Length: 271
Figure 1 (cartoon, rainbow, N blue to C red):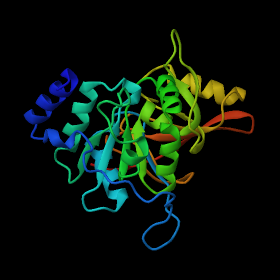
Figure 2: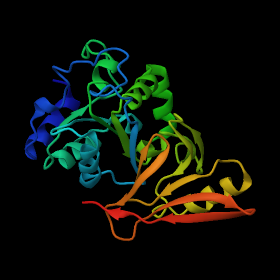
Figure 3: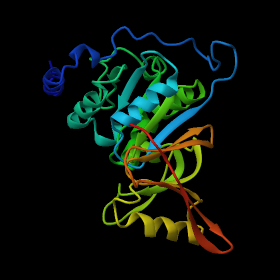
């Protein structure tokens, strides 16, 4: 057993999560090209983001959005360099939920992984992407072809989501701390049109930079989320704004009559 697997398995055992949930043994891919639901209608494309802290409340809501009795939820920790601590935290968040949790690392070797990205991700009902370095995440996904598979997952109606890098990754662009010295712009997958700023209330530099970039035209208008607050999108439409903490909010930031406008999107509480 690899040292990483031993650490994770030991931690999972301590919180009552079976180590066998860690790999994806027995996963069966869906039929190639399937983009409709059981009724033959086009699948609804779903993304659930949060500005920070994608914990139990958000995973529970993602599970509900799948429409499955016991959905398969996969954690994709590319942005955190497959951090064991993050993986353990994900399984801990899932421990009290009626879900089947999985993890798919990105730093892998073919000698110990015999399933392709499509076989793994397209067999899931939900995919949660970790926080971390968004720039590195995007580069790795592109190099590995994970970006293409995630788009297919989205088209099939598999619920996508995450917080921080795991929320930013779905937009055209946004603000990131992925480079040295200062916050900057990062280009992402573009599933959701426009821009995004996570950690809007938690990191002092986020709000003024986001407003400055949108005001100057350097960045498209878009959505900002406080930690513990998030937005559920169907295609590119906002369907619900939610929060797991009192006082946390989301915002639509744009230019109106030549001035920056920050419109508050009041959330509903989830738990």
